[in-house]
Length: 332
Image (cartoon, rainbow, N blue to C red; front, side):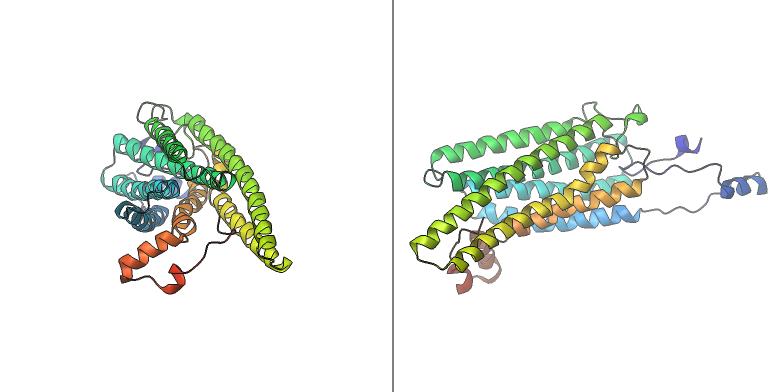
């Protein structure tokens, strides 16, 4: 059958060719010599994913270099931001390498390695986001003891755990947890199995629920701190309202962006399998990659210390508007 002889060069399941279509029947009747219809050499969706990977790699490489070459950026918060940037950088590299291997090195081994790298990188990215949320909560809830050695140790434990778990996820396809021998068990991402994709999707939903709960608690703490500052400095009620509204808006943007990027692909992975048209997989996976583009803007480039380091690298000076800006309770 045509499905058995077709070469699948993409990492996503390809739409099957209907052998009973009028075009195939007319081609068979018109001549005994097989006529090869021209096919699209490069999938435009793969080009878009590769372009997205290039943007992700360049953007997050800047953050990684800034944190790595600046000794002052060694606090737990910056370690977690660096972990997020490194995970997104590897995800972008994985998308680029997958595109190269899919069209230049068409082998099952290369497919397993690249899909494993992409799965591990995105898993580390989501886990780093959760770790940043936990760190922000602890920095507000235990404000007096946050800068202790205990916090640094806890941060390293989180980093070891999240990267160890993400590495295990990436090694699963290579170690045999794949659908290469039984395509009926494939998920929307080949060669990940349906069970693997479902487990990752459920894990994401649990982490998102935990992040939502933590950010609700962060919002309450920010509102309480803003109210205390307003009372101490005899601010007007409107100032307190503006500050708390800014903090709530910031948290809403963080969670809303995260959910908008990842929720479509997560829910689609739960209900779909390899028989679904690949265009749906591309359409839901592409927004997930955009989260790695947005992460540096939300978590890195908005940070005052990283802004100073970036200004020093680019211009050799720090603008007064950046150096003199004070941190407010809404900067969460």
